[in-house]
Amino acid sequence: MLESFFRTHQYLVEHMQPGVRRALMDEIDWKARLIGIKGSRGVGKTTFLLQYAREHFGAEDRRCLYINMNNFYFLGKTLLQFATEFQQEGGQVLLIDQVFKDPDWSRELRAIYERCGRLRVVFTGSSVMRLKEENPELNGLVASYNLRGFSFREFLNLKTGLNLRTYGLREIQNRHERISKEILSQVNPLEYFPAYIHHGYYPFFLEKTNFSENLLKVMNMMIEVDVLLIKQIELKYLSRIKKLLYLVASEGKGAPNVSQLATDTQTSRATVMNYIKYLSDARLINMVYRPGEAFPKKPAQLLMHNPNLMFVMTPGRVDEQTMYETFFQNALWGRHDVRMGDRSSTFVVDKTQRFRICTELPRRKNTDVIYVLSGINEGQGQEIPLWMYGFLY
Image (cartoon, rainbow, N blue to C red; front, side):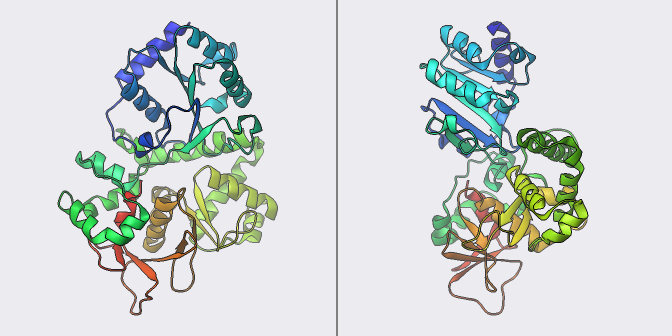
């Protein structure tokens, strides 16, 4: 039976479309025996696994094998049994896609870890999964990473064939004038920025299909599978969660009116807050809190997870300022602590640095605020181009 999986593996690796090399590829400790890669639907987790296989082994090397848990074969055989057989055949790295499709996935991974000592396992899962919090049997065993959608840098490299590098937040702050000159000598970022904002976050924009329809399909799958299945929510509540997402998107930025949302979705305030958390875990929205606050308290602001979602949820009604704030928050999300700012700033990052996202400079500037401007290629001093924050990963 392994032969069938090897043939599929070889075909997928050989026929994988060449694409941009993801920054996460160099951040993972590939020597770890159990690696979990989480990410929302549509960000390229399958392609990422296949890229790893091609880069480190090639298509015909039988020491590495990609499998997908959608295969009906696993209804009759456990992951442990499969992994054991693969190891006996000389297997060294098992790449498991959509591991959560196995109801006993965490126990199976633990058993593989304990009984297949020569095997390394890399698995993908939904962003909704709580690998360590909800699966104590994996505590101390799994190295967990997040795969995100394309950064603006990755999008730019894909479109131009360049190999522009990443920059840290402090590096951008201290060297942005020199960095912009380096990049502008090769490409004009503002020529590509509107396209990225509209459709560049999800890799499937490369497919010759309608992007908006594809994104709508993916968003529905995020809720119907990633939220309902993993969180074990009854199907009858599906329409309420979808309506909540629509209401959040339609209301625009600002603190959510939880009481009104509860009324509109015919549920309780507590349930609304849980649903908001699930939508955040699914990477459909971002919850922005004031400094010192956290869930289950009501967030100070709700934003869509990335700007692409705004054009699908509220076509023709995308607010420019909110769109740029969404881009900035999404660019820093996951690696930096982003909080709601005060009257003079939009966000407070990592507890100390204040940023104001602007389409134009205010008349009065604060010396301790960094002004992030949407329409400029180059900045000076405390004025930095917005697009540059797309180079953080």
